Length: 115
Length: 114
Image (cartoon, rainbow over all chains, first blue to last red; front, side, top):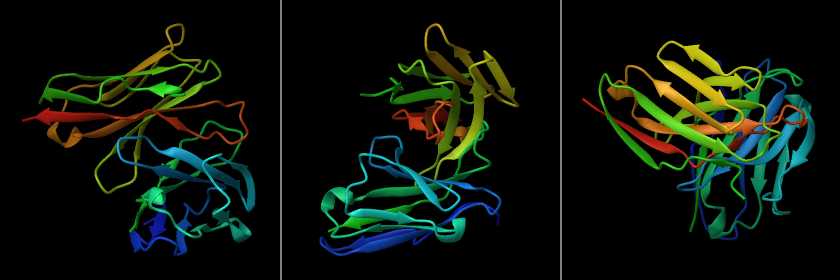
């Protein structure tokens, strides 16, 4: 399977705990995005990587959130001291070379529930 | 502010008929538009896109129309099939932005009745 993969698919945690999600993009894609989707809304942009460089972060990404993409391959999104408001679907997407009109291809998402 | 709007939360059509999903945007900097389809518990699946230099793009049963003066686009599905039942999201990006991040609407739930 050469699509975008995400792990885990589901995560249930207690308020105050830290969680980490992983995204493996399509191998030849150098652009990687994280989005968050809550019930009744469309996905909302969180952050963008071009290769290993994090080039943009949304205002939605509070200082409890951190994302990395070491070596420009897979990416991780960590949420520290989770809050109930963090409950959402976290989506990763990848796209081809920057500077061109390219679609973004999404993974299956990680569903986070904070109790 | 909602820069991309899908004002119809749901749409029901009969199998074989045309489905028309609508989307409006407010940001005149948007110049690339995409439609995604999403099933429950899955990520969005890319369907079709259009750049602002075109007013129509067709791919099989799916056609997207863009009216830049009205800041409006629509997705036509002909003929509609029960397997098309899903949530459809309209998304837009500004090519001049370095990230090409997507701004999504809130989605329209399409139900195709057999």
